[in-house]
Image (cartoon, rainbow, N blue to C red; front, side, top):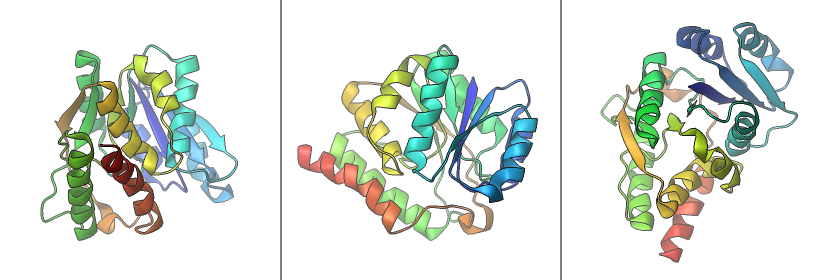
Length: 223
């Protein structure tokens, strides 16, 4: 497995995660235009053995993921790729579990969270709404459409690079296009961790939510 981490202004959680995953797991970090303030954290990631790629300016999470996928398609085309968030939400154990599932089945695996009382209200409401819209747009039910913990078989790397989207809409378009293309989507339950009410998230509730809902509404219209 190879760990792919798209980051924007990463905190100390990035080197902590790389340390927890261990040096035997290759990691690619894509810095999405964080600027000089991220130098120390990215240097720490590099010192832990990660390959660090850079966007000179902020382009969006989807663009960062596709930069990573393109790099891996060229340099490590035969390995499972697991994408995770580097803000402390995903544990090394859950990353390994999701990647291991894909390694055995050859399916896309989603690390799905349980949305109980410990989850911030905006996250519970947002996931419930997107899950309902996703079901209406595709006919497929998923418990967690917004998870950033996802594993992909190596044969899907060129397809992942072709899915449109540059921002947070990209991850939703991957799910919608996977259903349409017949790529199996499996759900693997993982721990739900929100640090300080998810205060470290760079998700804009207004602008980025609009990006997420746009492909869902397009799917509803097409259906």
